[in-house]
Amino acid sequence: MTGYVLGDHVGFVLRQVTQRHVGLFTALMPDPITPPQWAALITLHNGGAVAQAQLGRLAAMDGATVKGVVDRLVARGAVQTEPDASDGRQLLVSLTQSGSELVARSLGPAIAATEATLAPLTPAERRTLLDLLRRLT
Amino acid sequence: MTGYVLGDHVGFVLRQVTQRHVGLFTALMPDPITPPQWAALITLHNGGAVAQAQLGRLAAMDGATVKGVVDRLVARGAVQTEPDASDGRQLLVSLTQSGSELVARSLGPAIAATEATLAPLTPAERRTLLDLLRRLT
DNA sequence: TATTGTTATACTCTATAACTATA
DNA sequence: TATAGTTATAGAGTATAACAATA
Image (cartoon, rainbow over all chains, first blue to last red; front, top):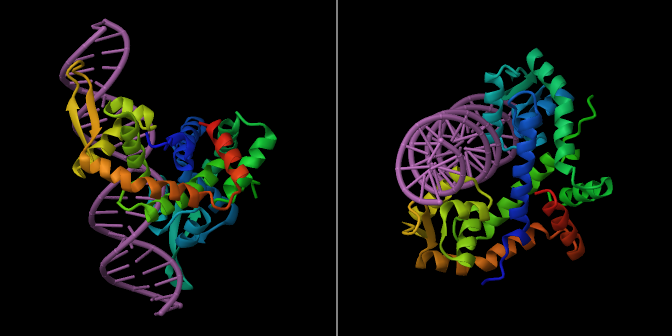
């Protein structure tokens, strides 16, 4: 007996809550979109075309991760890339028409996934949880 | 403008907090052990030999995931497996001597990783956060 | 037969390191 | 030198299907 109880450690509980949330998100979204893919799509929807590395910073993905996510979204026809004429290092990423339509029909379900995840909590508790989590980023 | 702000949605913030926690965990642990591997090791340390599927339930992993984690821990020499003589379907998993030593020297750092992750919060806030998160599992 | 557990396969996300190209 | 992007490698999580053993 070590006294080390998994459920008392934030890392383990974070993983469990993430498992539940991803399950709800997957079930509710109308297209087979993952949470990181959705973060990229909504960032492009709100901010227009951005360089791939900047997209990664805004959506909390490092270079290798955002590359894979963008590649899969390009293969799906949701985003497109083009070199930045004013900076040869940058690759501009933007939504296609199909990607814009995907975002439009996914906004409601994405909000519903957040609501379903937080369903066990009161509105005040949800605000407290978000405030505390944001201080740990 | 959609009004959909990533930082207001629990899934996105959970992903960011998990990123930070895993970074701290990786930096502090003395061996290259991941959080799921640690969950398996501490479960075996506290509970002794258990069937692989039961280990998965206790450490929050499904059958396919726990198989991969156990395989990597066997390759590392930290755990061993043997058929259960009383139930031919089950594969008993247990710590090796080397695995027990690994757990012994990792307990302090694992606690330090939790402490470092929660460092921005007061003790009362930490209890609140854990309570709220546990209600979302 | 129905249930439980294990195995195999495939896809996605994450991170690090090494490398190339451009500013 | 610093930044952007690509590639390779590794581990983890998830889902599905197929298989074996037991009740």
